[in-house]
Image (cartoon, rainbow, N blue to C red; front, top):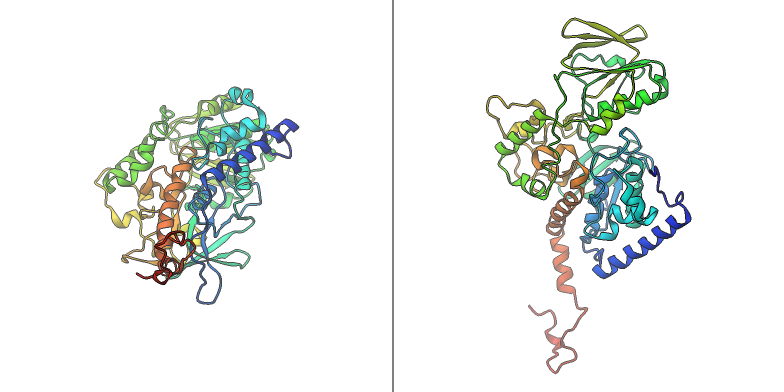
Length: 490
């Protein structure tokens, strides 16, 4: 199974296949007249600084989907900013420690409706039809290579090593400040920062903060698994990422890995398969607040099982053990190790702790939203669930507008609406539309359609004047009815 399909690494026939595919992409775009000409108005801020139409924070899977969808609507004055080095955007070759994507291989990827841009077209061009037929699921690094190819073939403008730490909305634009002091300005901003970018990792109560960095890590953090060789490792949680990290630790030579979870058994049904369809993607937004809340609570309670491949990968090691119905009370530093006190009174010691406790959505914890956190309208502000289905985590989620826009507490129209939340923070408002591989294509289309509408309204005065001044085609010039004195008479 290939682990990398970069053009520079591919065999000669692979390079030829990719070159032919890129020629086909060029022809397809020409036939479809894509991307359209740029139609937006060039504007500047009050201080004269130029405005991008859209800046996308995050150049991973959903950031690229947003950028390509905007470009194919004639919105080309855009920029993507990503804090990661080039090639490391998103989770796929960093903290995503499963061997393959969890989705099926035949999902199209991010083709924007163009067959030559699908994952399958790219893969077959690189390694052939027989390799495609033999492929089970897509290896993480191969998926990353596809995304990089897509970025390159569409010439999407990305600035890497660019960490956005502040957002300041104004009536006509948003200013973005980076960690190194640069300032970018755009009429609209899209936050496409994935699961960690909506509030970060979840550290449950009772887990001491001083365990970091030498004795503990969350599954979304970088871990030097080589340091765990011969060591005892405790994994808290039994979700997919917990199993991925347990397997990686075992494969890296950990002496013993034990997993602890509150549940009496693992979830059995992956209902994410049942809601990964156009009905859910297009329809969730049309549900009442009560129905969206009810659905989200139900899905959170039943949860999703880890993939069977990951479970089998982990239990293949004799030095692995899982403990069900074993919640902890506290986890603290004890000398050079970790001490876990469980609810049943048992105390255990380990050399290292891995938290597989997922991610939370809380924009107030994100540095770029620090100046805005008290202004953002949340679901807790808008909906009070009936007794029995209250959920503090869901209540913290932003209550978004039709195009993923933030809304402001107590204000009908606000500059906050220039910021679009295109990551896990959109979950309760939009379901899984901007969360996972199956929805990446319709999500970008939905976002781009709404942004195009906003930009048209914002730029109307300039566009109207441009319309009135347009004289490129004098339709009746070849006829006896041509009357140039009547050009532009309303």
